Image (cartoon, rainbow, N blue to C red; front, side, top):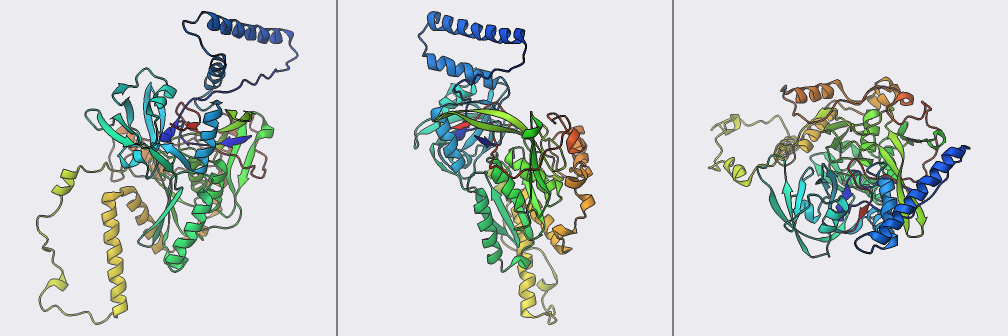
Length: 539
């Protein structure tokens, strides 16, 4: 049995990644209630099922395979529970295992269904869909000119499947666009690169696009390499952990990534139907960032495992969270083998951040709300370019006969010029990625006052106090955004902040107020988030 937090979003890794509703063998489990009437009612219901099954077999207009009918019935039972439970048939189970290892074929998007429409939850970095310009929040209305209206998610996904190298045309509806438009994509083999690292000035940017088997090991090695290339940790201002459009993945990887930046304290807890099934995972000593300031970037495509990491670092005040509200998937699914090549995926628990808050259907509010401006059309970008390359700004050094500055050495002058280049690079980055530039500016400010993670007192950590981790400024920003009030802080379409409160009484799904018992990690994993569709399958 393995727990999956796969595909952070209740979406579908349209393997495209396209997640679909899956089916499987029925596990009949009698509830020994001791009540004869309850038992007889159960058998009557099973007789009803058998009667309907026989009627369909004999009288349906076309002959239907018995196995297909039974699997559909099982899947219907599971999917009626919640959007993330379902049956994983043989072929789908193989795809599920393949995708957690990081390689599969398709378009490279995760999709779900909303109000009968197929919605893009998030494109995956460096995949055909991302390169074609597909964005989180897009709605797919047609595939190769054929409407998807009225189809189930499974049926829509089937339309998007095809061999590697084949071309597909999808029609998109996008907020802010006046009419639908077509996008052509060539299917390809998707190799997920879980972690990418780059430096912006003296800041290290860690882009984590998914939580698969390789995520933590890649993160650890790339952090060490970045510190070495910078000439030591003293030359690093801080770290940006970019979790935008990260749909989630394996729970054990989310726990290890959180632990990578924490020295102690709870990371996450899960609470199931029975108190004895509750679990809690705690951090161990050792911070890969060595106490340097951190900023976590999130948006509406950050889900599940991404939200676990964000919630842990926010509750421990280890990082400042910047961006827009996350997706809000706070449940854990367990994949249970029922035959050697098939399984059921069942929601078995809710997870809670260290302060005891459930983010289910609420998401995580950032400490600082920063909306990403839409990209400028190419013609508008050209309009901003100056018509002359000549410099018309004037400073003292531009004046003829200006005195030289002999009070600084060549090395000091070189350092000043280097700092100026970094500032200019950050200013240029604002046009390319405003949220990232904002995060880097925060790190520069914290570095200027020599901030360290150890500077945060225990009483200021929601993980220890149980208070709401969202700052008052962020909550006010939410209120302003919803009421139309303005301000210099960009708006975000997020909802209210999660309710404060200790773990025992928090949210729905708390098991009678019983606190989880601390246990060692058992290598569980996480599953899809809030949008109808269970496990990912290959298109």
